[in-house]
Length: 115
Image 1: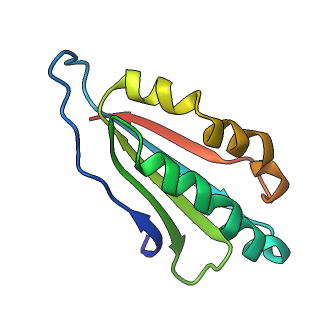
Image 2: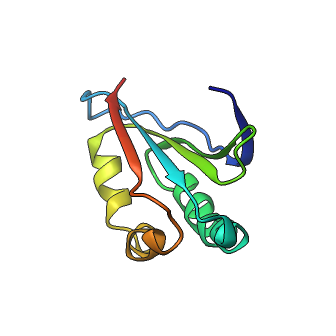
């Protein structure tokens, strides 16, 4: 499947000298209500910008599927589980969890991987 970059923020990867548990990759497929696309894009911007600046984040990208204007993917690369745990407690991620379903047709499809 081909994806077009929608909003992409990248920060330098920070290595962990005290934790060898391996990096984590999380992909979230989001199917947005067509009438809420503009509002969704504004809503997701805060999450992408803030998440990409967190300690332990190697990559945080937001993509729109080519040919499908209402299907998006968030691709996250984290240094380790501790970085994911930190991210999950941040105000911007908690806000995302509290409101994302208002914009979606279906539940998010989450894929978690070790790298």
